[in-house]
Length: 255
Ligand SMILES: [Zn+2]
Image 1 (spheres, rainbow, N blue to C red):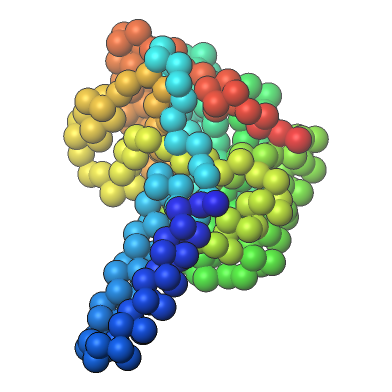
Image 2 (image 1 turned 180 degrees about the vertical axis):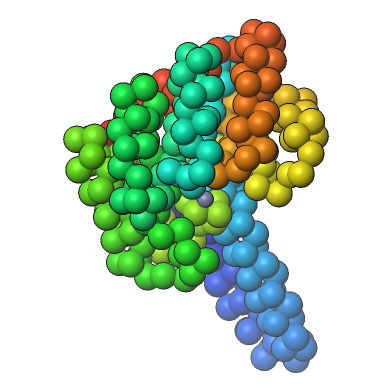
């Protein structure tokens, strides 16, 4: 059972006891409202913080103290090819969580990812703002159709899935299960989509770096391309080796 199921059982029990207490001892009914608000509060936090594993178990960190994994979300995008040039020059493998509709627009990038030894994961088909409000059926369709287009290009079906915006909920948990995907989180969030200062971005990552880290970056961001060479060099100077996610987590990236 996931934490949200435990919490729901506790919530149901507390509410039942409160109803009885309210009737027997004429306790204020506001207590029911307060407990319900606390419950909803945790449901929302559990959706936002993927690393709580509240609705679905996600991989967030490896155990090898000498390895680090780079992950890039939202491609194929504007800076994917320049980022690939740096990774090729440095001979560093990475994992790219692709958006299905971008894959359809840029199949040549997907081929390049595969040819150059990078892993390709699934990051939904449309990455819309309404993604998390969809039914399990709709979410499963997004995941499956992204897997279909990637498989049609590289002949392999991804099994790694990163939830858009890092948000999870019960419907998505079911969709991930149905599509037989591994949910992948991170333990270093770079905030590269919001960063304006390259040095600050670089230090935010490097200051927290330790073995087993999964670093979340975006190949849609110019600033990410800007810091990548130094990020790789300084990480390696600190004694770490870059590995793809399947090696880091000892799981299969494709089915
Ligand atoms: Zn994304």
